[in-house]
Length: 235
Image (cartoon, rainbow, N blue to C red; front, top):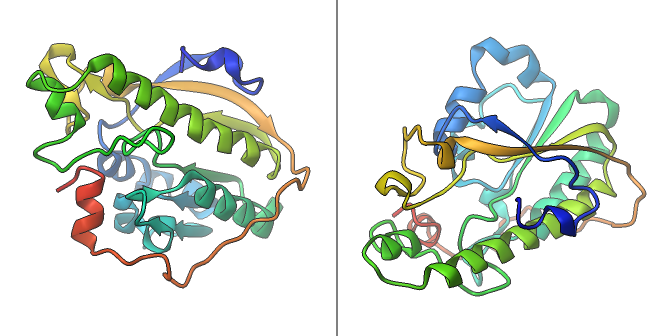
């Protein structure tokens, strides 16, 4: 985020927060808890993350499992424009009845969209390749940054098509590239590069510059669950 903050007008002062987790599944388990049931009931959750099915029975005001119906088999992930369209539609649908909306993109998690660098499977992927001395660290980092720019371009569209007095741009966890011998973002790892996440606040105003196009019939999903998990590095 430090590398790209000057490229976007909506990215202003960069702060940090400490995440409750080092993986997405862990973050969901420690965020959507009984303690915060009142807040959950007034939250719309739009998620492209494969772990989101674990919280689908939470009492959200609205829940969109974009991973389930928005998978793009050509790229091996859920594209940011799909998430943006679902979030715009949900934001307009629920309007003032929602206290908050969480929009959970997959990027900058690999695979990278602008620079076609796949993640690889759980046992042989981008990060494990670096761990054993395979792959060019600078090229991988640049691909990661380009994937961040890709998703931020879509966040910019979202901010012009939903209403919100306060928007927090952040992440559920970070990523390690060799700190303390750690690569990727393993479960239960407390190191700063994985648990400390960016936190930038801004606002959003629906100028209706985009008309969302959302398909929810699963017509784009032609891969098995195992294929999808392997593409994201979970198998």
